[in-house]
Length: 116
Image 1 (cartoon, rainbow, N blue to C red):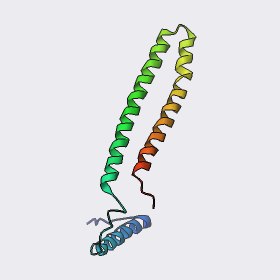
Image 2: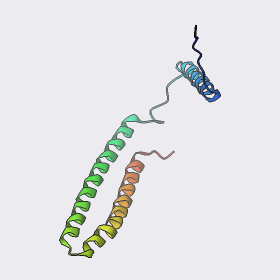
Image 3: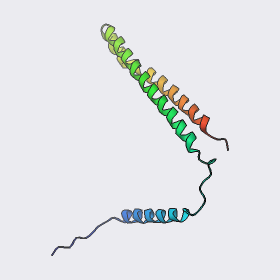
Image 4: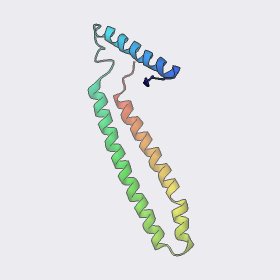
């Protein structure tokens, strides 16, 4: 009869052992007092995440409108100039939108960070 043998690499065995060690350490920590609200304020984190999501939706919507305007401008521009609009114009628009988005997202994050 054939017998099945489980073959694993040393990395897999090491990863499984580490996972069980981590589980054991976490189970020991359950008796310890929880981290204070000042260290991690989940309500503030959720508010910051919601604001950043709204910012992302606004940025994506603005990007769609900007690209639609560029496509319209390219369609209305005669000849090769329309291709030039499609080739060169999107990059500055993307760069500007990305810079403004990152700046606003960092500002939102800074509002909710605590100075320790």
